[in-house]
Image (cartoon, rainbow, N blue to C red; front, side, top):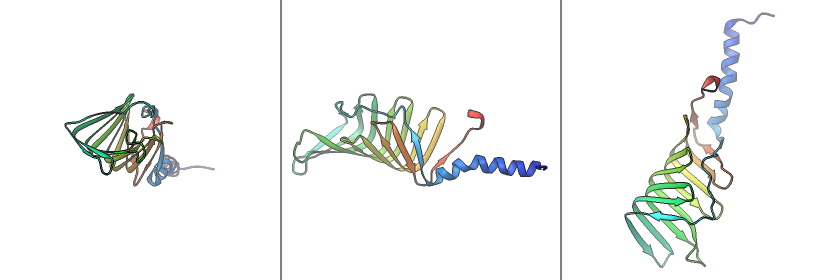
Length: 166
């Protein structure tokens, strides 16, 4: 049986594109660098702070930087939601405006992010771009489990695959 160069090229091209087709639906991504100890204290630095005692929230604005262990999250504004029974315990952080999440060599950018402290999940939405070393992956929603260092990118996922492991 003789295989023509054109047929071999078609088979190789289809084999190479199979992972890309899977990425278009959603992609599981390893986040070895984006991992955090969610039991550590959360430190917030910002230009301004407004506290609302009636609904148990605080809004940090202007060059907001949130640090928890090695993880850093920056944004223009962050709404902090405290526990309903324990007002000293942070339940959620809702960051908006040029959000960047960095841990180790991994970094993700998005329009907004919601960090649920108790379960250690960060959901980033709006033109998400994840950079891991020289690799990038883009989509509309990135969900990261900070405890396990795993995540999922969804919504018209796009990446560039380098042949030969380069």
